[in-house]
Amino acid sequence: MSISDAVEGLLGERWEVWSTFSVPELTEKARNTRIAGITIDSLTPTDARAMHGRLRDADWYLGAVEIIPSMPLHMAVFLNSMPTRFRIFEDSLYVFHRQWETECDDSRDHGEFKEWKASGIFANVQWEDSGVRETIFDPFQEVEDFQRLGELDELILGQFSSALGETLIRCADADPNLMERLHGALKAFENHESSEGLAHVSLSCRRFTEKLADCLYPPRDEKVNDRKVGKAEYRNRLWAYIAENVTSDTTRQLLMANIADLGNRIDRLDNLSNKGLHSEVSTSDVNRLLLSLIVVAHDLLTLSPPAGTFRYDPYEKFIRQIFENSILGSNGE
Image (cartoon, rainbow, N blue to C red):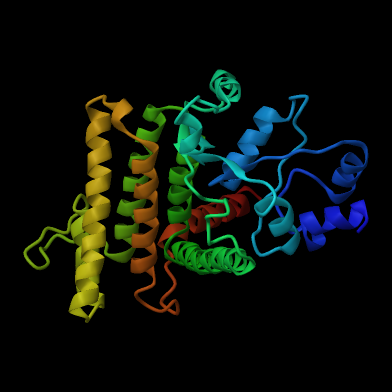
């Protein structure tokens, strides 16, 4: 196999694998450089791009490639030949080691460990025992296991991508402003640099949920099922919407429980923020809040088929402005 063929095998047909290389670039590097590599577990595409940005000026760093277990060359080059060295979770780096390395003389690579801590890339760097994974005692390293892992990855991505796509379409149908608020929440989470920044995400989630309630069940003066459903009672309005659109008791209870859970998460983060306890707001808490928000939005927006009456409310102000400008322009002539 030629170097160019090997590179194309690594980057996939039509470069379908995410990487910081192009085929010609990596081919040139492979011809002129002896390349070594490390594998990192649980690295998201966003974190991979951020890490690439921090490392690209280092003399020893060439770039990064996504590993797809179902690709034969990836299985041979990365998964079978290159042990996983690290795991990234939130803002922490976990350096894998074997427990036996510490039983007599500590033979772990403390020099590398200190370098990672000194780099400042991660808030925390700590050891993690990898046990018997990726050793001769690991029975889950066969071809079938890697293929199953790759298929599972594709199935999960396909299933969630479909649900997320439908959620976004329904948001746009209900009110394009929902898209703006959801974008604000996710963007705030993506760009946060402190616990205080995380606290602002809960506010964006509340605004999205309030707008969702406005779209699905506008405020009313009278009570519904002995509950107020005014402007401020957005949670009650979502419950009322479920009660009027779901006939199954089990489904109704599950949806209402999801709304209660979402509201409780928002309230908890809001309370911490109002008390100035930003340090107690964790990335995990906010990540779960966003997942809960998307699940609730998908569940509620897909309760009814899409072929409903078009809602002109979000467009009313802009339409009126166009007519007013047209009238003023005509009078000016």
